[in-house]
Image (cartoon, rainbow, N blue to C red; front, side, top):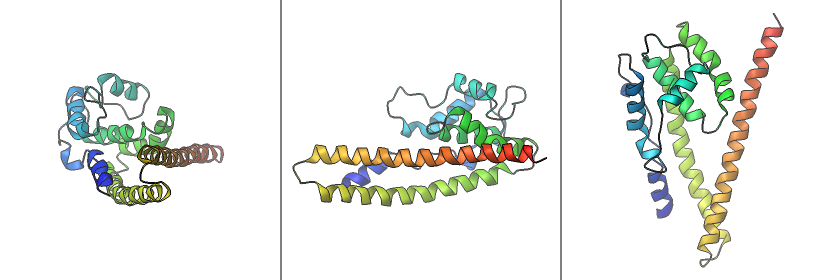
Length: 193
């Protein structure tokens, strides 16, 4: 289990932008990028990887993944939305992310949703996911170890990797199905008026 604990510590699961990390003042794009670089630095696979760039943020804005900024400044709500986009885009397509966040954007822009409460709930779910993830990782490592002999360390690692990739694909497919349901529900709602 020592190698699993080491792996988990290397994943920097606690890397996140908390509401307390977000300045109460509006930020320029360079400040937004710096905030994300600081928060997610330990999650980089390679040191030269970029967490967020001006181009990414501009593409999110052009794609209407978050509601328009005023005077080239990003509010705390924009920061929370960009954080949600950042987390989702590694699994979902940009179009899916846009659809998933569409109502959140509309309600936040109309001030019908306290985005900080919504975002705090998301962060709490993340913390729960971390604990469940660690338990599941340990369980899968034990299962692989039980099926392999001591001298087949590399093969055990390949099985473990294949199992993790499969589980990741299952979660991705579930998220895609739920995103598709959101789109269908919205279409059905518009047709029923």
